Length: 412
View 1: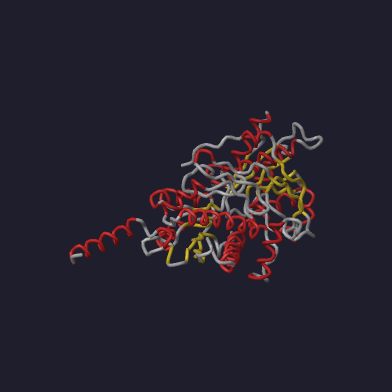
View 2: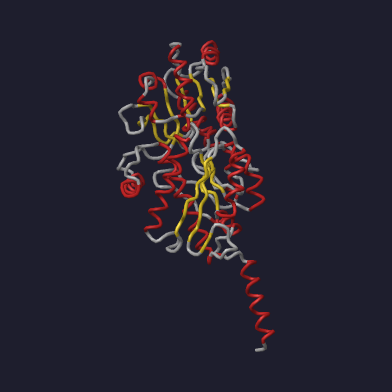
């Protein structure tokens, strides 16, 4: 073979390797894949008031992948490294800034916390062909191509919570109102209420919005009380929930509070509001209860906690983050089986992904974008200060007809 012919073949081979993006071999041309290491990004609040959600979500992902790595890694080969960045929940532009900082260092975003943060990132995710997992439950994300959604959407949480309330003896015809954050998260909860109202044939009572930095809730609580609200949908965050319910308790007003999952934190059950919450609050969520060793998934998680995070206290958000990490791991396993860890390869793997049930959680149907379906059943929890996260089961597998018939549209 002539020297010039040999040089030509070497050059063509190098170009082909670049064009293929490194594939499962993980060359430098594959963002977030270096040798036998895959880097997964996490954008979550770590220092603002929402850090009570963001920190346990991050830690559960770190613990999960520590366990995976010790067992041989993804596909029996790849170690997973988690690269976190601190964002400010009230300022969605911080996610854009941090995304630009790490986008060339990560294979995908394993977690982005905040509906408005996802909204701000979507154009960039589409442009870069990046997959991200929302740490938020908006129904809009179910059929959005670049998103690996998890959990039952907020809209269905509210539909199931309202349906469960109306199904209790003596509650037919009761007035249902809402009090939600003035964010995309709050809007999703309101959408759920309006969908439930259309299905059940009732007109909601007063609907109130508030900001995360509001301090005085006497006026909005008074508005709801004067509207004769028997139940109130609350879409809040833990640092604000105590202020909202504290104002209601101070005014001596005790409707049934039907709360979305991010409204809760176990510390509320140990606060001066414990008795009030025990009498009035339901939290609509899903997944196993911390410490329930009859659940195989919970046993698996607790074993990992004992080994890798023995100081971890019972936490609703750690459990939720564990389910996210399992789902991210399943997607990476699919990409490795397909032999392509490039961004295009991960998007293709998401299209090919089989239905997946994180241990102890409902089945999420992935696959082609137009057919993706989340689970539709929730667990209704009531407050019990003696329970590990301040919650015990009120009712499992609540999925009312309006939740079963809810239609998901193509996302952005």
